[in-house]
Length: 479
Ligand SMILES: *Cc1c(COP(=O)(O)O)cnc(C)c1O
Image (cartoon, rainbow, N blue to C red):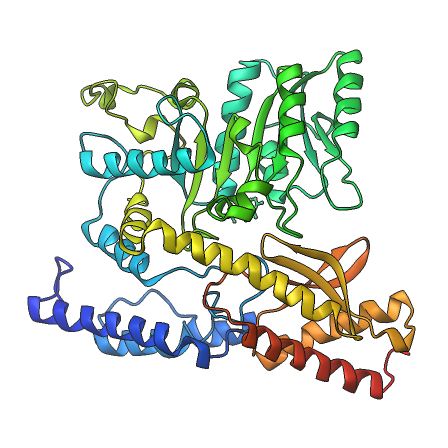
């Protein structure tokens, strides 16, 4: 290695092949690995902490060190037994596509720099617009780092369109089950706490339309300006879809922006059942989708879709002198004018190549499989005397808890028991399983969006949970 940071052709080939070989090995042997990483800061410091190295090292030694120490100390979220949070099932075609995009270091900001990259973003955004029933010609959108930035971009656009410069009296509405990235975005945008209206959900964790209407009416009486409602199409906790059509009607009547955060559940539109559940999403002014979740793309890839592409241009176009010369034809989109980033990586390529290679039908089948898998798990749990369903399978998410009917445990002990189960599973490193809180109860949650997760995988994990519960109850630790 020399001063211009190059390798010889031979070295590049050898090094590149080593990496591809390791990735292939990883994909093939994934089910045999343990997905949980358990490193403390102290342990990681002792592995990695050093001064920036002045002298070169042998490239193979660096690579071996990374394989031995880095990827053995990260959760494997593509693992079939990764159930917690929102897993990242990913797919190999997109992994390679991302590698290509990085290799060419394609600048996906302006049309002139890479017309084909811009065109592929237009084409894939159009595919998504059509899927969600937004107007394909007038509509627009862009890819972002993830759902959080897509939500922020949507809300900045909504505010610009509805409030202009003065948003001192503006109010925004979301449910208590809306994703935290929304409140984060609203706070980043400089809204005060009292401009955010959190509307309680009903007993099924759905946005209460009646409470929404009351809040809007009351705020108007008090001189506030309602400007945006955020609905969830698949809450992260329970996969619950808000009453989208009803909310869209309220928004239309009240002249309020209708944003749908479909970062979790958006991909369900590809299945028959999901499409039905998501009905009403086509009325949205803006939709956040998150291809790096259930569209099976590797990180990072979020997406914002809007009903009218001009809204993005109106909100994000600034024209510094040095960009003036490269302004092209109106129809040749500069994506730096549509959102926050100027320099943008070529995210569209992975969605494009994976959808072309596998075909949309394969994606639909995978999503349908995931939804059905969660329903199957629900049925099995309902038929067991040990388990209780806390929220039914919805868009591949299910919440349940260990609560054997024969035992008559009190709430506090059921919480302790389920917390214990999750902790023991984590310590075993066999599955990524976590608890969440619903109705003030500690519950186990499975998000089954990996198309390579089998019912067998789930059964193995449930049996493991049961054995921890038995032992704990036998020792009568909590009773
Ligand atoms: C995951 C998620 C987000 C945030 O998306 P990131 O890609 O993690 O930034 C926003 N909303 C919902 C509903 C989500 O599930």
